[in-house]
Image (cartoon, rainbow, N blue to C red; front, side, top):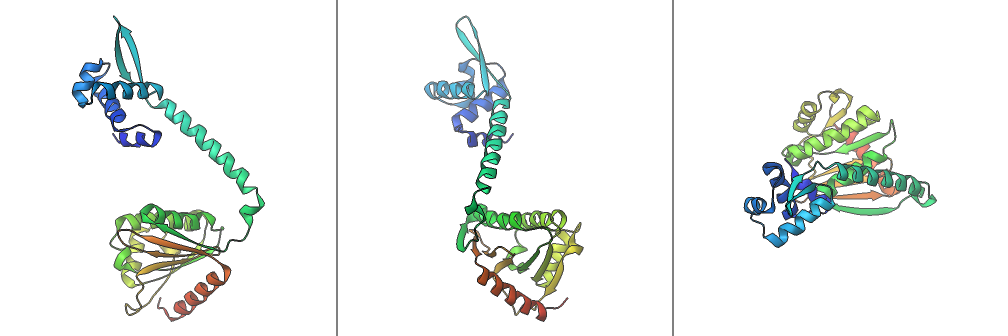
Length: 248
Protein backbone atom coordinates (compact mmCIF):
# COMPACT_ATOMS: atom_id res chain seq x y z
CA UNK A 1 0.00 0.00 0.00
CA UNK A 2 1.25 3.46 -0.90
CA UNK A 3 0.34 5.04 2.42
CA UNK A 4 2.95 7.76 1.95
CA UNK A 5 0.31 9.71 0.00
CA UNK A 6 -1.25 10.55 3.38
CA UNK A 7 1.66 12.92 4.05
CA UNK A 8 0.02 15.27 1.55
CA UNK A 9 -2.86 15.62 4.02
CA UNK A 10 -0.67 16.72 6.91
CA UNK A 11 0.10 13.32 8.48
CA UNK A 12 3.65 12.69 9.64
CA UNK A 13 5.67 9.45 9.53
CA UNK A 14 4.49 8.29 12.96
CA UNK A 15 0.85 8.87 12.00
CA UNK A 16 1.25 6.80 8.87
CA UNK A 17 3.15 3.99 10.63
CA UNK A 18 0.42 3.70 13.24
CA UNK A 19 -2.29 3.74 10.59
CA UNK A 20 -0.56 0.89 8.78
CA UNK A 21 -0.14 -1.03 12.06
CA UNK A 22 -3.84 -0.70 12.80
CA UNK A 23 -4.65 -2.36 9.50
CA UNK A 24 -2.26 -5.21 10.29
CA UNK A 25 -3.31 -5.72 13.90
CA UNK A 26 -7.00 -4.93 13.68
CA UNK A 27 -8.68 -3.44 16.77
CA UNK A 28 -5.89 -2.91 19.27
CA UNK A 29 -4.83 -1.32 22.52
CA UNK A 30 -1.91 1.07 22.49
CA UNK A 31 0.54 -1.50 23.89
CA UNK A 32 0.67 -3.75 20.79
CA UNK A 33 0.79 -0.67 18.57
CA UNK A 34 3.83 0.67 20.42
CA UNK A 35 5.51 -2.70 20.14
CA UNK A 36 4.73 -3.04 16.42
CA UNK A 37 5.91 0.45 15.46
CA UNK A 38 8.63 1.27 18.00
CA UNK A 39 7.11 4.71 18.51
CA UNK A 40 7.31 6.28 21.97
CA UNK A 41 4.08 6.41 23.94
CA UNK A 42 3.87 10.23 23.95
CA UNK A 43 4.31 10.38 20.16
CA UNK A 44 1.91 7.49 19.64
CA UNK A 45 -0.90 9.16 21.59
CA UNK A 46 -0.42 12.36 19.57
CA UNK A 47 -0.51 10.38 16.32
CA UNK A 48 -3.58 8.38 17.33
CA UNK A 49 -5.35 11.63 18.15
CA UNK A 50 -4.39 12.94 14.69
CA UNK A 51 -5.73 9.79 13.02
CA UNK A 52 -9.03 10.06 14.91
CA UNK A 53 -9.25 13.78 14.08
CA UNK A 54 -8.80 13.01 10.38
CA UNK A 55 -11.34 10.21 10.39
CA UNK A 56 -8.69 7.55 9.77
CA UNK A 57 -9.19 5.79 13.11
CA UNK A 58 -11.89 5.34 15.74
CA UNK A 59 -11.88 3.78 19.19
CA UNK A 60 -14.05 1.93 21.66
CA UNK A 61 -13.70 2.12 25.43
CA UNK A 62 -13.86 -1.09 27.44
CA UNK A 63 -13.15 -1.05 31.16
CA UNK A 64 -11.59 2.38 30.77
CA UNK A 65 -9.21 1.11 28.07
CA UNK A 66 -9.27 2.49 24.52
CA UNK A 67 -9.23 0.01 21.63
CA UNK A 68 -8.34 1.67 18.32
CA UNK A 69 -9.24 0.51 14.82
CA UNK A 70 -8.45 1.85 11.36
CA UNK A 71 -11.06 3.49 9.16
CA UNK A 72 -11.07 3.96 5.40
CA UNK A 73 -10.05 7.46 4.23
CA UNK A 74 -13.57 8.50 3.25
CA UNK A 75 -13.38 11.81 5.09
CA UNK A 76 -10.18 12.76 3.28
CA UNK A 77 -11.82 11.88 -0.03
CA UNK A 78 -14.76 14.15 0.80
CA UNK A 79 -12.42 16.97 1.77
CA UNK A 80 -10.40 16.50 -1.43
CA UNK A 81 -13.53 16.65 -3.56
CA UNK A 82 -14.67 19.79 -1.74
CA UNK A 83 -11.26 21.44 -2.21
CA UNK A 84 -11.18 20.48 -5.89
CA UNK A 85 -14.64 21.97 -6.37
CA UNK A 86 -13.56 25.17 -4.59
CA UNK A 87 -10.42 25.45 -6.76
CA UNK A 88 -12.44 24.90 -9.94
CA UNK A 89 -14.84 27.65 -8.86
CA UNK A 90 -11.93 29.99 -8.05
CA UNK A 91 -10.29 29.24 -11.40
CA UNK A 92 -13.47 30.14 -13.28
CA UNK A 93 -13.78 33.38 -11.31
CA UNK A 94 -10.16 34.32 -12.01
CA UNK A 95 -10.54 33.46 -15.69
CA UNK A 96 -13.32 36.02 -15.94
CA UNK A 97 -10.95 38.82 -14.88
CA UNK A 98 -9.62 40.98 -17.76
CA UNK A 99 -6.00 40.50 -16.69
CA UNK A 100 -6.26 36.76 -17.32
CA UNK A 101 -6.71 37.46 -21.04
CA UNK A 102 -4.02 40.08 -21.47
CA UNK A 103 -1.24 39.24 -23.91
CA UNK A 104 1.77 38.04 -21.97
CA UNK A 105 5.35 39.06 -22.53
CA UNK A 106 7.47 37.09 -20.14
CA UNK A 107 10.14 34.44 -19.60
CA UNK A 108 9.62 31.80 -16.94
CA UNK A 109 12.11 29.22 -15.71
CA UNK A 110 10.91 25.80 -14.58
CA UNK A 111 13.48 23.65 -12.76
CA UNK A 112 13.52 20.00 -11.73
CA UNK A 113 11.47 17.12 -13.08
CA UNK A 114 8.13 18.49 -11.88
CA UNK A 115 8.86 22.00 -13.11
CA UNK A 116 10.02 20.67 -16.48
CA UNK A 117 6.80 18.71 -16.84
CA UNK A 118 4.66 21.64 -15.73
CA UNK A 119 6.03 23.93 -18.44
CA UNK A 120 5.04 21.47 -21.17
CA UNK A 121 1.68 20.74 -19.55
CA UNK A 122 0.89 24.46 -19.70
CA UNK A 123 1.67 24.54 -23.42
CA UNK A 124 -0.63 21.59 -24.05
CA UNK A 125 -3.44 23.02 -21.93
CA UNK A 126 -3.30 26.33 -23.83
CA UNK A 127 -3.12 24.78 -27.30
CA UNK A 128 -6.24 25.45 -29.34
CA UNK A 129 -8.01 22.67 -31.25
CA UNK A 130 -6.39 22.20 -34.64
CA UNK A 131 -3.33 24.31 -33.75
CA UNK A 132 0.07 23.46 -35.23
CA UNK A 133 2.86 22.57 -32.81
CA UNK A 134 6.47 22.51 -34.01
CA UNK A 135 9.16 20.57 -32.17
CA UNK A 136 12.88 19.85 -32.48
CA UNK A 137 14.44 17.13 -30.35
CA UNK A 138 17.14 14.48 -30.56
CA UNK A 139 17.41 10.97 -29.19
CA UNK A 140 20.73 11.29 -27.34
CA UNK A 141 18.93 12.37 -24.16
CA UNK A 142 15.27 11.80 -24.88
CA UNK A 143 15.63 8.18 -25.94
CA UNK A 144 17.43 7.15 -22.76
CA UNK A 145 14.70 8.27 -20.38
CA UNK A 146 11.62 6.06 -20.16
CA UNK A 147 10.04 8.61 -17.83
CA UNK A 148 10.42 11.42 -20.36
CA UNK A 149 9.23 9.18 -23.20
CA UNK A 150 6.09 8.19 -21.31
CA UNK A 151 5.38 11.78 -20.28
CA UNK A 152 5.62 13.21 -23.80
CA UNK A 153 3.64 10.32 -25.25
CA UNK A 154 0.80 11.24 -22.91
CA UNK A 155 0.99 14.94 -23.83
CA UNK A 156 1.06 14.23 -27.54
CA UNK A 157 -1.96 11.98 -27.20
CA UNK A 158 -3.86 14.94 -25.76
CA UNK A 159 -2.73 17.18 -28.60
CA UNK A 160 -3.26 14.78 -31.49
CA UNK A 161 -6.16 12.61 -30.37
CA UNK A 162 -8.21 14.99 -28.24
CA UNK A 163 -7.37 18.42 -29.67
CA UNK A 164 -6.59 17.22 -33.21
CA UNK A 165 -3.51 19.39 -33.35
CA UNK A 166 -0.94 18.99 -36.08
CA UNK A 167 2.58 18.19 -34.87
CA UNK A 168 5.59 18.79 -37.10
CA UNK A 169 8.71 17.30 -35.57
CA UNK A 170 12.36 17.54 -36.58
CA UNK A 171 14.27 14.60 -35.15
CA UNK A 172 17.08 12.20 -35.94
CA UNK A 173 16.15 8.85 -37.46
CA UNK A 174 16.66 6.95 -34.19
CA UNK A 175 14.19 9.14 -32.34
CA UNK A 176 11.66 8.90 -35.14
CA UNK A 177 11.59 5.14 -34.67
CA UNK A 178 11.38 5.47 -30.88
CA UNK A 179 8.37 7.75 -31.18
CA UNK A 180 6.69 5.49 -33.70
CA UNK A 181 7.19 2.57 -31.31
CA UNK A 182 6.00 4.44 -28.18
CA UNK A 183 2.94 5.97 -29.86
CA UNK A 184 1.92 3.33 -32.36
CA UNK A 185 -1.78 4.13 -31.90
CA UNK A 186 -1.39 7.62 -33.37
CA UNK A 187 2.16 7.70 -34.79
CA UNK A 188 0.86 8.18 -38.34
CA UNK A 189 -0.54 11.56 -37.32
CA UNK A 190 2.94 13.06 -36.96
CA UNK A 191 4.72 14.87 -39.77
CA UNK A 192 8.41 13.98 -39.38
CA UNK A 193 11.52 15.37 -40.95
CA UNK A 194 14.99 14.34 -39.94
CA UNK A 195 18.35 16.04 -40.16
CA UNK A 196 21.81 14.40 -40.19
CA UNK A 197 23.53 13.90 -36.85
CA UNK A 198 25.87 16.76 -37.76
CA UNK A 199 22.98 19.00 -36.79
CA UNK A 200 22.61 18.32 -33.11
CA UNK A 201 20.77 20.13 -30.33
CA UNK A 202 21.24 19.16 -26.66
CA UNK A 203 17.86 20.64 -25.85
CA UNK A 204 14.32 20.24 -27.05
CA UNK A 205 12.46 23.16 -28.63
CA UNK A 206 8.68 23.37 -28.79
CA UNK A 207 6.84 26.19 -30.53
CA UNK A 208 3.11 26.82 -30.22
CA UNK A 209 0.98 29.88 -30.97
CA UNK A 210 1.28 31.10 -27.38
CA UNK A 211 4.80 30.18 -26.26
CA UNK A 212 8.24 28.75 -26.96
CA UNK A 213 9.76 26.19 -24.61
CA UNK A 214 13.45 25.35 -24.60
CA UNK A 215 13.90 22.22 -22.49
CA UNK A 216 17.30 20.96 -21.38
CA UNK A 217 17.45 17.31 -20.37
CA UNK A 218 19.55 15.85 -17.55
CA UNK A 219 19.29 14.72 -13.94
CA UNK A 220 18.01 18.17 -13.02
CA UNK A 221 16.08 19.25 -16.15
CA UNK A 222 15.22 22.85 -16.78
CA UNK A 223 12.75 24.51 -19.12
CA UNK A 224 12.65 28.12 -20.32
CA UNK A 225 9.17 29.23 -21.40
CA UNK A 226 8.94 32.44 -23.43
CA UNK A 227 5.78 34.37 -24.21
CA UNK A 228 6.59 37.03 -26.75
CA UNK A 229 5.16 37.27 -30.25
CA UNK A 230 8.43 38.37 -31.86
CA UNK A 231 10.31 35.48 -30.22
CA UNK A 232 7.63 32.96 -31.20
CA UNK A 233 7.64 34.21 -34.81
CA UNK A 234 11.45 34.03 -35.01
CA UNK A 235 11.55 30.46 -33.69
CA UNK A 236 8.80 29.47 -36.12
CA UNK A 237 10.74 31.04 -39.02
CA UNK A 238 13.89 29.17 -37.98
CA UNK A 239 11.91 25.95 -37.69
CA UNK A 240 10.46 26.41 -41.20
CA UNK A 241 13.97 26.89 -42.59
CA UNK A 242 15.25 23.69 -40.95
CA UNK A 243 12.07 21.91 -42.03
CA UNK A 244 12.79 22.83 -45.65
CA UNK A 245 16.27 21.25 -45.33
CA UNK A 246 15.05 18.08 -43.60
CA UNK A 247 14.44 14.70 -45.17
CA UNK A 248 11.21 12.76 -44.96
